[in-house]
Length: 287
Image 1 (cartoon, rainbow, N blue to C red):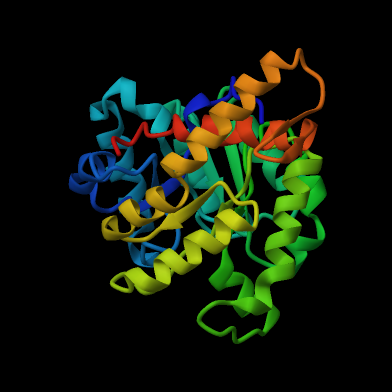
Image 2: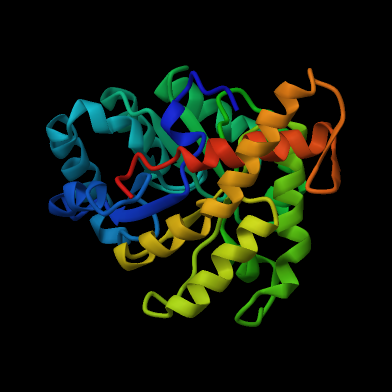
């Protein structure tokens, strides 16, 4: 990822949605412990309220603390909808530092967004359709893209799938996001939502599966999900201790291959240790 776009997004674990129509919740979302907040003009806003949502966001934006704006993204309506162009025109006046594009399917869609919001704004295209999955490498390599995000519920609907609670049917799709991110040298992708806002056990299962599978964060639809997601994507004390010992042993060995705890340590293991320590320093949301 080009961290110059928006450094706070590179290691963000939790991305909390808040409806654009509820500006009184913006500050609460920022104080929830979430690493990033997504002000939503799309799914959280009824068609009849789209114009009002844009107006409320535009009015509230100057009141957001400047120091916190790097943690704020806006999800606009998808390309091809009746609201997309007006969303883009409004966002171009705000100076937002992060935009989420739902149902991303072409580099042309991303280019239009990038042209409207400027080169300082990080783009997070959401893979929510079979067409988006088919174009995933092109999307990942598009200028301005910081991370990919997975819209697991919309993808199921588009593909005609009816997944079980643990969504094993989507394993191949999730792997595709992880591999495309790696090929494009992006930060680890952001996994989709857990629909049950009060099901802590399912949330933990989903978040840990995401981390094991190579994701770096997860979308949240309720503040109650933030702490669980942050915990799942934060290395344990034992993992941090191991990573520190790996780096110390690497320096002592003068950069060559060495053995630690009876196991050979080479470049891939060193990279894992470095990533573990980087993840341990995350926590801009206050957790």
